[in-house]
Image: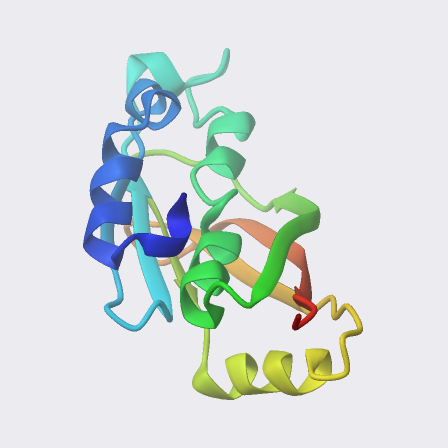
Length: 153
């Protein structure tokens, strides 16, 4: 499905995706070259927890699929790309709007192509923060992505 999408179409889809609509998640930007994505989530009555701060599940879900989707777009149809592992460490209560900037470098994309050239799987690890409007870290997310070049027939 995603293989023929543009970054603009992905952004539109994610902003109308029912779980994101329900949590108040907004994707503000997907880079034209698939190397970055900006996402935010304001604190609303429907995404706060019992103590009035961001629900932890919403904090994680706002960033969950994005590295995998960016890599699918950046690498193209000759690769298998899956989320393999993730963790989130909550640093401080999230109040107000929270933001995440997820970035891939051209060097990282090149390294992935290099590491998978033999047909072996590669599992790069990525880390990024979720921050509040003041730039203070609310949570730290770590993701491991499984990447393998598809066999050539």
